[in-house]
Amino acid sequence: MKYKILLFLLLVSASFTGFAQDKKFYIFLCFGQSNMEGNARFEPQDTTVDSRMKVLQAVDCPERHFTKDTWRIAVPPLARCNTGLTPADYFGRTLLAHLPANVKVGIINVSVAGAKIEVFEKDQYQAYLSTAPDWMKNTAKQYGGNPYARLVELAKMAQKDGVIKGVLLHQGESNTNDTLWTKKVKGVYDGLLKDLNLKAKSVPLLAGELVNADQNGACASMNKIIATLPQVIPTAHVVSSAGCTSAKDRLHFTAEGYRKLGSRYGATMLALMGYKNFTVD
Image 1 (cartoon, helix red, strand yellow):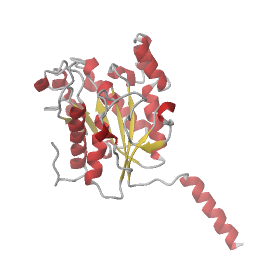
Image 2 (cartoon, helix red, strand yellow; image 1 turned 90 degrees about the vertical axis):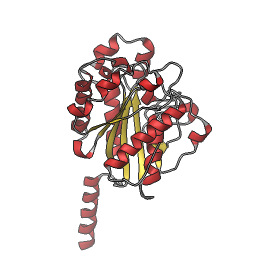
Image 3 (cartoon, one colour; image 1 turned 30 degrees about the vertical axis):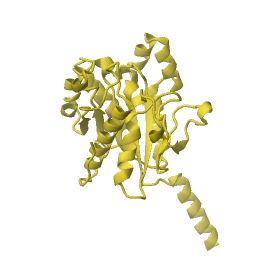
């Protein structure tokens, strides 16, 4: 009789836990437009990835044998089937180079090339997409027509496996000189915290600068607005793009530029985690 009671209590306990969450599996939510999506072609050196770095696949890519809603080793592309290298690639590598060997890193990337931040706003995305070009609508359709909701859906799946430790943003080219951009970003960030039951102090927002003025960036003026983000979001931190090489269009980074920028995202996160004895370019 005692054995049956014990077995019953164990089954009840299992039903409440529902899953085995790994506290050493650090998950990061990434969103934005084409630079977070990844524009530069990845090179052979970018395809060797530590098995501790995972990505939760956002869309089906049968030609690459990627299945949505499943974790895989984070070999690029990390966003959609034919995207390129993203800051998230070398963000993850930089973390793993300095974190303990028993820590894993998980990436979730939901990004829409060319889109304003409005595509992630709950009350604006439908109106925004209604007048968007077909190619952008088709990208959004891959995320069920609602990129924000898809990001939250994936994040909730991921919370069963690990712990969300931060949010990475690279966006702004399409909102250049929009003085309300910081408030719009705050709305998206606050929404993520609420919908995922997260605390801002435990989940900082890392926002990367656009192609810098030192690269003659076409939207470099937006960096002045991005610089004010911590005034609106106290847990926001801006990642410099100075010296990150630009593609010919002056909007996107080269593969080397993404590597450097991604490493800086990683260095920023490591510093927030209390790691200080390291350097990145």
